Length: 297
Image 1 (cartoon, rainbow, N blue to C red):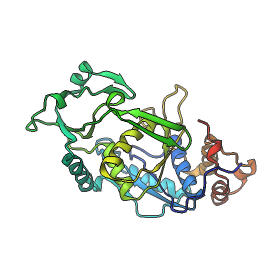
Image 2: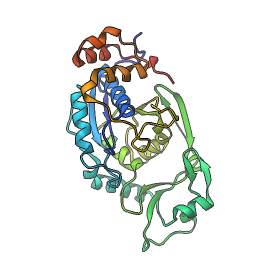
Image 3: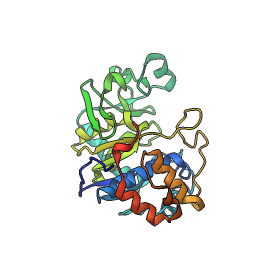
Image 4: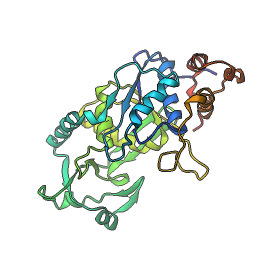
């Protein structure tokens, strides 16, 4: 079964791991899915290390991830981008939004937010306390963006129509934390635009972040990529595989079976004899036979 996706020769995709540890099976699935979708379209596949949050970074993890990808036979097409070197670009985007009178300081503590908010899609919805009663910038403060309740809707290639009203579903969200670290939502939008990303293939745990990113793309005048959110790998307790859930690192010495397991998880149907070949022959088969329509959703 061939994919019903039309070939897009201008395709530019990316894999953007956070260096909180080596690749585990969950991150391998995301890497393989993004890689195969790019290669199926004869497109570019880029790597971005999302190390904007230095507090979560594990020393040496970024280099280990790149080494693992190389050993898995996954070749990236351009220079690796590191978010930790991109603060000036994030600040420039923040200034553009500030000129639109959409940014305001917030001094609320987590307890204050918890005591005065309702539960939304992924946590508490900020009630706009510091928008209604402006906080002093003399105090340590985060920077939030003012949202609205206009529906933001997009077509996910795998999951179909998805829609949110940011004000009521998420609330005004943080773009720069009180400790000065730029938030993921801003950094990813700026970097996708800078790298001219046309297709974002990532885990479905980020599906509900996409409307926030589209909101920022619209305000900044950036093009909106196409999105494909892959099913998330979970453990026996139903938790997403991550460092926090003690997910085991992939074993490079046993690379081929793990790659086969990854495409199986993504619904692909490699022939049993593929395990008798090598990594090169695996990728040749996988790129030619990639089919999004086979992925469970």
